[in-house]
Amino acid sequence: MDTPSRKHMLVGAEDWPPWFLINSFTSPNFTSFSYGGIMWDVLLQLSRSMNFTFSIIRPPDGKWGVLEANGSWNGMVGMVSRKEVDFALGPFGMSAERSEVIDFSFPLRQDILVTVTPVRLVPDLWVIWRPFGIKVWITFCVTFISFLILFGISDKLFLKQSRWGQIMEFLLRTLAGDGSVPLPRTWNYQLFFTMTWILAMFILGQGYSGTLASLMTIPKVPKMIEDVSDLVDQGDIPWGLETGTILEQTGSKAQTGSLLHKFYSGAQKLKGSCYADLDKIKDGKLARLCEGLTAMSMLSDDFSKEGKCYMYADMSFFSTSTEDAAY
Image 1 (tube, one colour):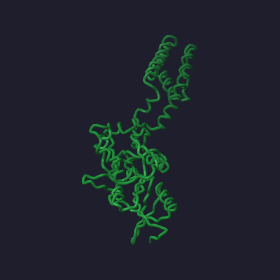
Image 2 (cartoon, rainbow, N blue to C red):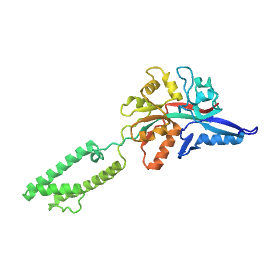
Image 3 (spheres, rainbow, N blue to C red):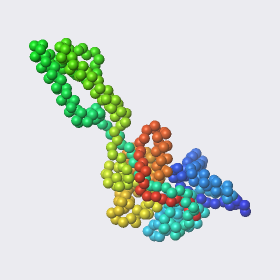
Image 4 (cartoon, rainbow, N blue to C red):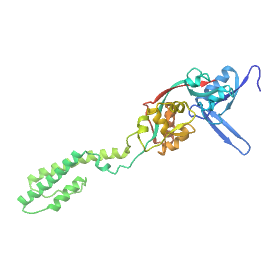
């Protein structure tokens, strides 16, 4: 009940982590809600300092507010303009069209829009060859054949016998790091070849095993989507756009052929924030354009929960957005 000293106000808000969180609890008899987030804390502080009570009113269409073809505004912007609520939390992106029907508070944050895309790990069938480059492998093959020929020819010339099988076994087992391999009985001049080969294979083996271990620890990731330009140029991952936002309104009026128009025309029109599509992004089924704070919060929360990084957000921002409350 209103009192002369404590006015009750209707406040428009919608679920939009991490700014405003709405959690519902349903029982057989009733449904209750709990709230949280940055704007909830702002609202509590305002209610204490300005001495008012409030009720949270969600927009029936779940939208922020864009101008429709019939000239009316939907979403929370429409609720404020029609005086259905006293003010709306947002935070809202500012635009000239919106400023004609609502007023904005002092800016709360200057945010950026960044792409949030899935990290697609691919099996690397050639990982055993990647520790060395092609020149190293060619050099190794030439060296192996050269040592095989040297040992074989020297046996023919000085020992008057052929030990190709024993020589091949020695070279291969040394290459594999088999410490039990017996040294072939050789003349003194062959001892130099033997020790040179063992030392070379030890150095080569240590470098190969260390590099291979690091390559297998860090999985192979294809080229990442760095910005909106990369997003619209690729054809593997669909992307989404939340309806009823300032980005939808701006994109619908963008010049044909511009980057914003390509993004808008190719996007799936979705309801809900980036958080609502978190699982789809992780599964590689969708990419979104999200506010910088939202993107960082999504990645941080998911990594804390999973212990792995399934999403990628590049901070090469697409555009900036001044965010405010509306009244």
